[in-house]
Length: 372
Image 1 (cartoon, rainbow, N blue to C red):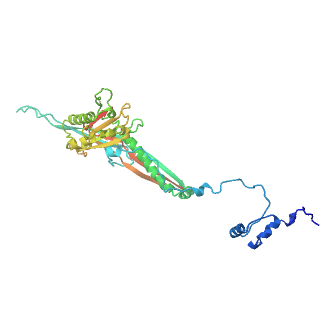
Image 2: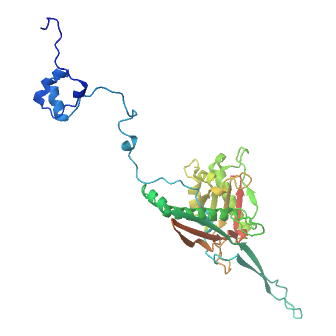
Image 3: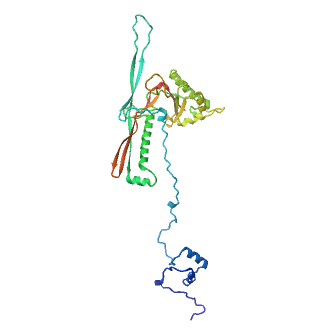
């Protein structure tokens, strides 16, 4: 017989009879009180609607490593495309153009120079007749061949495709870019390999000496960054006058197309304005509309750490038969596919180019200024 203060035992389950409760009905939820589970009718309805089966196991220690609920991979949004790393602008072609001459296998590019030799004399009935003649010289430039190849495997291409990258196509573009960078470099600096004759825009042996830019009003600097509108205009005007004088008036800056090649560090100072609102570029456009302005990073610090500019005539009609160009960049082969080798697990490709660098044909048509 139970005493008044004796606790009521609602149920007894031994270890063998502990098991999940499966398939209960909402109306049976009150019976859970017999095993110590107390739920209100509303809460039980919510649980029943959400989970049709559940088990009441004993609490035990974790058997997995605690982690975040959602891996970060499922919380990433990938932007389209790729941002490519750029290289310095290649301006050799813009400054000198490209003359595709000769063949990839050639050793030299040769330019003939002809001079008429004659000296008129006072006439005399019985004097010897002064005879006219001509003389030729030859200017040589050595051809330099570059090479760049690639290798691509089957697995590499398949995996690159997963990130929307065409591995072989990008490697071909890289080959072309590498060869173009090399050709541009030779176009400015030449190529020194023993006794070869391959020169560039900055070191052709026929280049005239530099002229130093005038100092500013305070006599503290020759740099355009420290000069006024009138002082920068004076530097350009002096170069134009020097070009005309050095060419013995064969160059008319108002009629012939000219190029002003300026160091990248200095070119933006052509936007310096006068008190009345026009810039140096505006003045040039009005006074010398035939001059084009081209900036090049290779002209930065080109002469003993000083920035420079070149002023030269693009082309001159002087009765020559070579085309009349002041500068040429001789390029036998801009891009040449050498061959493809098929491998068991991929393929190899090889590409090449050939350039003879720069050739200054008319030194008297170039005026150089340093210290800007």
